[in-house]
Length: 401
Ligand code: HEM
Image (spheres, helix red, strand yellow):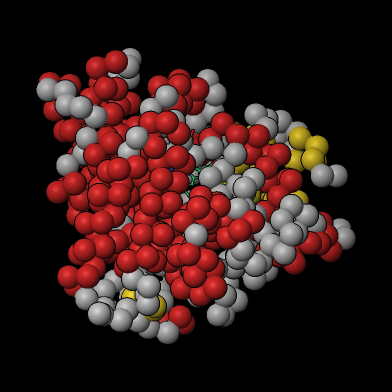
């Protein structure tokens, strides 16, 4: 076996002082061979895709499945062998035609037009959070005061979930996203979230209100179990993702003052800036697929049943696709990135996330022109233990006038 055929472990260590870059070992692997054998922590061999073209091709290819029970986890601490099947309603673990049924029900509700209609509400919520920051004064944690509440409030209002219950469901959703949580802990969090959502679904069926859960209860053929599962999945998907982009995006901008200054000075840069931050940070760094049949790709043959780990963060730094990929350059606009995925599972909430980010990030920088980290960059706790990368907290300060 040549060195290039030798299975490698998934690199997970980021270089010291590089909180925005993918794990240090990924780039060299991509440059050497963008699709290669990988040793999974449970001892199986599979594949690792790090090149932009390879990751994109696999995401678009129906010969690869997303069903959890066919996938091996690339991180240690998971089960021996494949995962248990996805919980009911978790669309990321479904293939067509089951996936198509759920996706069709939701697609029209998350369109660019519909999400832009929410802009005014996002502006109100953002203004309210900026005022809360000012009240609390320099030294606040941006994650708890700003980055978490904005997407949490928006997804709650959209779905019709009482925001007042957030402490419970935020904790459960966080456990589901944690790589350190045991299968038992995940199971308990899933049960808690499901029981909470089930009670809500029963209430919406009895007395519909003006929200997505009520609309689906009234108009779709989803069973209570399916609607409960889908509601829990959408809530979890909408909570943690954008929150991490807002916090980690702010950390990145504060660490690149010239880029932050450009965003302050040019409001029209907001859209391209969000795309570039998505590319540069690619916080949903990996996803996994399993081959349903033998597939020839990039000079390799992936055998039926083998898992492929797709390093989205490495793909979005591929010099074959993006010039000077390790530079954060808001003006380039980063379009074509894979940070929202690609293919049939491409993020359903991306337009909502875009509206939230294009409103909130420039508003934050403009309201606090002297915004800065209140701790050294090396003291910002990074979410290296979570499926969605970012920061656990971000203490910030500014000059009071
Ligand atoms: C799917 C990232 C915000 C709902 C995905 C996928 C990625 C992603 C990478 C594809 C996963 C895969 O193929 O395995 C992100 C990021 C976000 C974000 C980085 C924030 C910046 C949201 C929001 C919602 C949402 C706000 C709100 C509902 C979903 C859903 C799917 C999904 C429902 C599954 C779609 C399907 O399987 O058809 N997201 N997401 N996401 N996302 Fe997001």
